[in-house]
Length: 319
Image (spheres, rainbow, N blue to C red):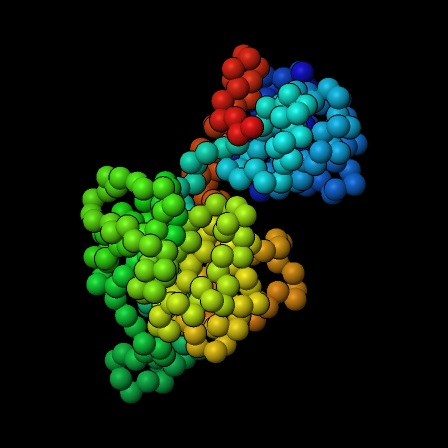
């Protein structure tokens, strides 16, 4: 049994181990990253192919007659042609619910930075402003409290509900939109409203929806104009949910107060991305999932996917 990991660096830059694979397969190779032109070459003869962001197209699947199983190193599986894999009788497994706490934590890292401007004030102090000040305190931007603010959540799965629990703990009022009616068993109250109501009422609006035909480009100028001019938008879901040119225009024109993004439409970011030089937009390099704890859980679930497949009972199958 031969296994190929096409892009293992993000999951394991060297602080975890792939050594357990020695007990499960006869032959395996881990590549840090694989360019598109080398995908078929590197996967030749493989029974199992593992990918994070490297695309597995219908043409790739057709070119790999020995392929029996595909596993992701992520929850998302849009880089894989699921229909082609199904047609070839190749099960595809993903990694569900490993990074819930980390993603929810980054949402509030954005929100606390927006409310307290920690980086701005740290830079000010380090540049000597406090030393030169006549006063024992000063602030470079208005400081606000999360308590009493309205937390809006679009998409109420595991991550959305985790965000709701933290918002409850901060004393925020939580409102949410979900296409499917959900019961909420958190420690506080959540009011489920229409999407327009959530968008228009929120002080902080956090996106937790999957990328589908319906959500692709969901956040356009029409969407943004429904938000309060004092509101902040946060996206830790998928970059393509936002029309980036519209968001830049909305930020420049004061349609909304600011944004925090962990994902962009094209990753790695391109130098011509309209948001990179926007002072009102905080951007992190897709790190919400990347804590050591989350990646350790991912590795454990991935190992379970491989061992379940080898026993003839694949789990977390998405096709």
